[in-house]
Image (cartoon, rainbow, N blue to C red):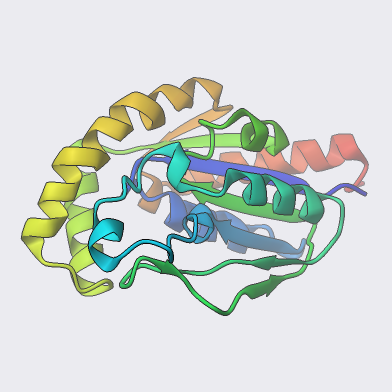
Length: 210
């Protein structure tokens, strides 16, 4: 039986990863795994530290979309994958990967998940998370300072030069492909229930649920 792929997209700091975790937890007793698109940044180890700082991390070219599409297809077919891990402090792909076993439902989240046709077409359920720009920026500042040790000036410069324009060019337009558009994802219990109901409908149609 083909596994179901649920894609959750949205801007940086919109709450898509939190929503993915909530949906995964709500799938019990069905098995579910979560993937983060952030792990699939290209390996820029050939660049100097200074050059890596100048990479546009919010452009589709920054991601290894071939690998992401390949591994999603493998999980859907019931095969284990070795998911890459990205080190956001050094801007490098980590040496170690994470083994991900196939499950009835695979939930993947990322800013550009619905912007790429190959990845989008693999998703049986497509969700876009909306949040006001000021909320997304505040969450990004808090995350990058506390988890990645970045100074505020660097965070704001990156937001102004790449995050904001790439959101307008690629992320926001991709929501037209979504089956569901979810506001206030971090505390939207009703949205979780709707997504789970949609997943269950798809599983019923596939014959995976009685």
